Image (cartoon, rainbow, N blue to C red; front, side, top):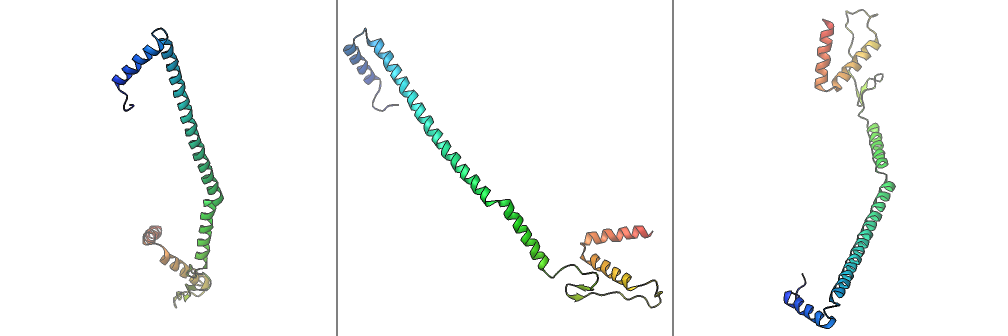
Length: 159
């Protein structure tokens, strides 16, 4: 552990202590030396603990600052503002679904089916034609799988 101090050196130190202190007081001196070493170790442990505690306090202070920064930044509010901005942008786009009364779809005229010449004029009105046109346009906007589901459902209802 300690470089330079081995068994021969410790033996020399022990013999010198025996000669200087004497055989009668040597055990008492060794006890005092043991207590002093134990006290030094205890002080070293306390010193180490205090440094660890300071490190933890500094880490806690850093975490407090990060939490405060997160509270101030309000990421949930930022995300909700971004979502609202995206919604507003989508609303501002002119590529909307067709308006049922104007007969336009994306700025172009919508095809309104004409009534059959042989059909009774009283049974077919302009409102029915517009409703059919809106239904057709809505059908065109649906994904393919939903279109097929509607066709099979309307086929089952008719039979």
